[in-house]
Length: 369
Length: 247
Image (cartoon, rainbow over all chains, first blue to last red; front, side, top):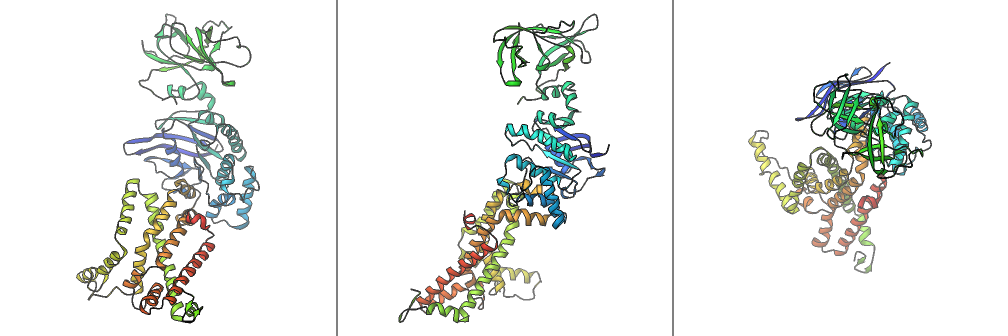
């Protein structure tokens, strides 16, 4: 498959501060590629280097196999959708979409045809004469995308374009954007700090932290096989145990927590005696009152502290016996667990295959928002 | 008063303006030069305002604004005399140019139209820059970047984005500068030559020299009406809303 965008060993330094540190990736033509990371991780800097607004300190950007070093943003075959969309308020919708075509020197009929067919494709026919401030948030979004797509770029770069929308519209636009991308077949490079946006829309997601990529994978893999503690914490919710890893005489691994619990491990870290590990178990991997008595199932007696009801996202906050650590457990809303009340004593359990662990890192690796 | 003659009510004072070429020609000359000065001021003010609002950082921005304002702390008279000391035959500039051997002998640089225009541009510059800075500050940088990203060159960005966006500021600055220049008396009087008669000097002559207060009043009223008319035409031509401009 053709490679639309390829970034090789790119770095950007601002004085002593390294914003982007030796990042490489390539995106196949027609794919939806997301870069996911907390604010300040360097993802906007990376995107601006691809668009041409910043020159990398090291490394190269190739678009359609051509090196883009020293090529100005107005000559690159990629277009950027800004966080605030940056629609031109002094022009109407038609003027905004025709802007790029006119800059290329196209005139008359061909501009008109392209703009009108583009408006139709984004579902805004007959909106050409409207002023920008007459549009709703979602319509502005679509005009911004149309303004770029009409130029038929090799790749469309999107800088958190859904950030300014309210929650309901954001949910809607996520699906809309994915559908649009599939329909037009243009390569999208999308940056966001919202993991749900990245997971829902993308073919591939790169998780970025402190200037480098932690993991580049499909959303499913990222979720089930995080390659680092940062990814485990940043993508999805996770319960974290600090424990010591031990090995018994049969060669099985265990995690021993400070308050005396012991959990079986199927995916241990490289074993050093007595090393501290972080064990991650997802709330939705934990089963309430498990009936399966599989041999190596981890079972824990807990008491229910609070029920956090949130529709499909409902969770239980539980505390294991002889412990103060709170755990979050998913509570499916299928009537099965309606008998659970606050302060009840229940059993929870999880398959060791569903848990991951990493060597303990010093200090906070990621500030929970 | 402007309608009074020796024998009571009359339009004579007004018809005199249109029948005597020296009067209306002075006005046309004054208006033309005022428009020219306004354009020159605008062309210089746009890049300066852009530089102050978009290019430099906040600290330097304040310093530059103070530099712009400082000359206006002294009166127009002092500033014009400052220019005269610099430019006259025995002035500072001539001294240097002759000293450097560029000129063989001192030349008189005062008392011609070019010097007068330069003086008017200098005295009214601030009144153009400040309103434009006001509008440009609210111009989102990402609009410029978006235009650049969509393939626009520098000239197209100025023509399509920056100038249309700054239009209310440009128009209010232009109105202020135009009125100031049209109604100025000191600068044309002191820096202009014998041929650079300004319309305000005509009014002065009527009232002070000929003691014809009625004629002077008529000229004053005509100045107001005609300058308002010019501004109205300018607003119509640029499709600007007067209420937006004066806001």
